[in-house]
Length: 396
Ligand SMILES: CC(C)=CCC/C(C)=C/CC/C(C)=C/CC/C(C)=C/[C@@H]1[C@@H](COP(=O)(O)OP(=O)(O)O)[C@]1(C)CC/C=C(\C)CC/C=C(\C)CCC=C(C)C
Ligand SMILES: [Mn+2]
Image (cartoon, rainbow, N blue to C red; front, top):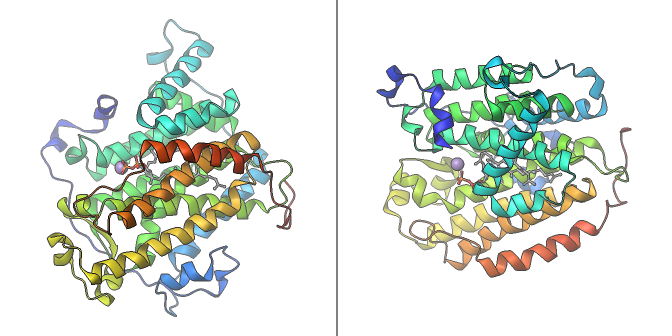
């Protein structure tokens, strides 16, 4: 995989170190829009937000949610050029063969990097399945830019080039096979470029920032790198025709699942991140708990650490709870992989608890037996259709 990423790194940039600190002081506020925004008050309460004229991250992100929901309702407003494959990759093949091959390759990458998820996608219709693979591969490649073997060569300029390439593929000018698959997907489904751009923004943030002052800042980061995945996926996975939920509420749930996954990822990887000089925990909450960066670097499990971790885990679970409300509203064939991924990822939090909150030296993981046991549970939930409890606010 890393080979296909090298193009964004110019030889000149190889020499420079991309890691630097540029902390940004954010000014969150506890929004009255809380319930309207679809965040449980408990979730917001944890953000430690105070009255302030600046918009909170939740509000900024909610604007994107509304935009995505509107696109699904009015798909015709999205005008995309048809796929115009580059000569470099069309030579000797017609577009049809090429596209099938491109999607197959996406499936292979997906199977290699995320086996359980890949198996889940096999339950989806062939069209949807390959579109999800194409999105997965683009996300994985984007993440690899800052997390993969060539990460130390990645500069903001390289990310600018990656974003330019993204624009090109949305306009029907894919650069390589994987891009060609995504280019086709975004032409077929009402997928907007904004969440993709925002994910690249998250990678920029990772290059320049290694501390988060408060939960509002961390929330924005989690949106960029993971909430975006939820917003990208819903138009492809589809909302059930029987669903009476509003489109916004489904997108909100998708966003919440991305945030929950990322928060869990962060809590699992505290030790690993600290060894790279990174602390993805709200600084103000650490201070309130009587903890400092040095405590994290020392990596000793103390009473203070345990009680801090309990609060962080509680918040991550709230986002999972928020996400649960939307899964049943998805198309029936998409529900099982999403339930499976939700149940599996959430169990990482249980594993952190079972490790006595030692996420400095122990890696929390879900064992094979538990993974297997979760699959029929996910299936059971997936066969239950959309709830009748939510009111349809807008036609779909
Ligand atoms: C069915 C399903 C899960 C679909 C999503 C498929 C998809 C496009 C996944 C892309 C994931 C990806 C490669 C993201 C790049 C950034 C990243 C790596 C984020 C972290 C994922 C965990 O990966 P890992 O443990 O390998 O992390 P390391 O890189 O090793 O540190 C994240 C924690 C976030 C992933 C976020 C999601 C999968 C969002 C899921 C939300 C939905 C699919 C929406 C579901 C809809 C409703 C209504 C709930
Ligand atoms: Mn990663």
